[in-house]
Amino acid sequence: MLRFIKNWTLPLAMLAGVIGYFCFSELDFLAPTKPVVKVAVSFLTPFLIFSQLLLTFCKVEVKELTPRGWHGWLLLCQLVSAAVVAGVLYTCTLDEAWRVALEGMLVCLICPTATAAAVVTGKLGGNAAALTTYTLASNLLAAVFVPLVFPLVEPSTVEFMTAFLYLLGKVFPLLLFPFFLALLLRHFLPSVHRFLVGLKDMAFYLWAVALTIVMAQTTRSVVEGDVAVSEEILIATLILVVCVLQFAVGKWIGGRYQERISGGQALGQKNTVLAIWMAYTYLNPASAIAPGSYVLWQNLINSWQLWKKRKQEEQ
Image 1: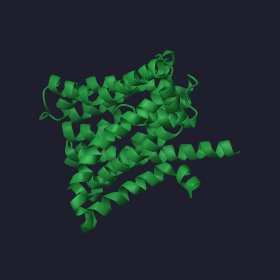
Image 2: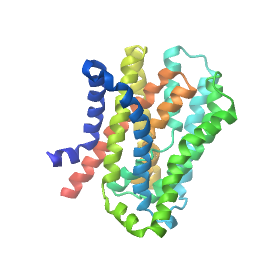
Image 3: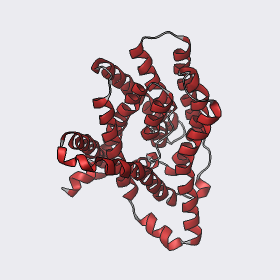
Image 4: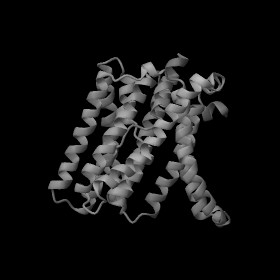
């Protein structure tokens, strides 16, 4: 049983999120716990992201955090693809279904790399340090692009500096504080640092817990939203194509620099928690279905990659 859970952690986490949502929405005896759970989740999600980043950064040498050639190409792909979609939304008159779908596509393209991507990259045998560098760079790109471009797509959004500072304040503390804490532990508390480094797969399982929470929130958005089923299918299908293309392009570019695994995870694995927030905050709230769909697709791809890696190791 333990071996089965370890091998299929990601699908089980997604299934647990779906089941958890329906349990809390359908079982009356759980109703009194909903306010407590809501508050707990609001604190637990950033704590899990912080903890898994700390464990990841503890395993990375600062001298390894250097820009690579493929970083620039992936950032260019991220910027150009998002700018093209934003241009279509700004210049073309679209019906509501396609507009929502393209807004969802936009947020999934510009969304930065997941804070947990280094965890999966490490398990797949990639370069976690190089991916961590790209994660920081992609968050900087998103912090500038989103407040600059999204107001043109949805004119009702807030002014530039307010949006820019809000997004900056939401993303960077989770990225920078664990990094500096890892540095401090390495130099001033080496015994604690060694202990954290010794927790080999803990960051991966913390990410699985966070995935369960996100999947429950995504299920709630789909079930309780007022979007037609046909529109949900359109969005999910479009995002499947986007997800596969980003993994494929990332692997192709990374492969030219002998970083195929890191390149694929850098461009393909997105911070969907942040993406859902950006969709709700800056765009049509219905477009949040897109990053919700991306949660499913990227983790199915990650589950397949981890299964393939495990089979290779067994042989």
